[in-house]
Length: 350
Ligand SMILES: [Mn+2]
Image (cartoon, rainbow, N blue to C red; front, side, top):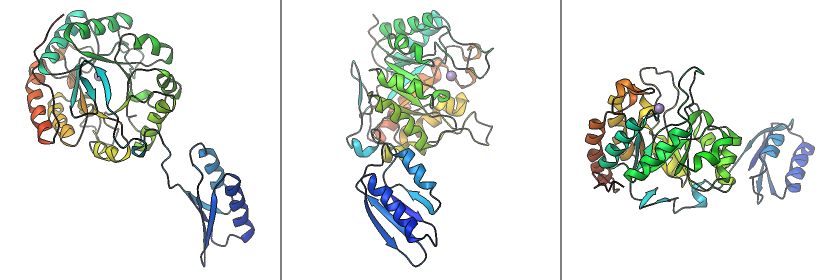
């Protein structure tokens, strides 16, 4: 790190900071300028010293402390240059050459609705079924989800149509329960900084998809992922789902620039949610294509047999025919960028 002293800092103040740095195991190299002195501190690790760095900033004669290393470690690209590939079994990998598609309804509503959707998305090439059994809602009077019966339906549909299952867990007391039914635990936007929940899924051994908080900066998002990794679970994927901006014509502003940027910062796979990212089903196809083109490792798309009757998020849910039409187009884009995507699989229904 570099400690920038204020103009006119006295030698005694510079010495005081240098002594403190030495105490913490740094080698200290002050550079005395005409007006200002800066102190280069090398050798010590900055991890675990976040609070100390804040202390340093509060010294009366310290103007600023500039960190050279990133505040996250396990999720940083430097820690795993080969990139994380999450193996879900049955040939489904996230972060490898295949671009994966997670599809299904926003909310599990009934057996009929879920089975119809699961069969259709599986036939179109999706490998992972999405569906909410616990729904985070802005209003306490909105639908809250089916709970355990919804989880059971998801697992049944997954088994029946050869799909892996992703579903949201909102409550740290339910992590173990949801993990019995899901192949991937989803942490929603509102819980991105729910540190107790992050620690709990960090203890779990199953993959986690961490959605970006609606107002989260990239660094805050990576630090949230670091909580999970620091807990011992390294099977993490990030999900860009749009951020809140001044624009109200779309539900959120889908930040596609985050994808190539994240590829320079982290080895974790990146999923894009164009449904939540736009809030409009007519924009889901174009944004899915753009996401694949700029390096997304997967998509999570809301599909409903009758969006006009959906309990939640009908306006952003694709119809089954629209999804069936989109998948081969996405496959072509995947090939154009050196990736591949399964489409139109032959289903062996069990
Ligand atoms: Mn939804």
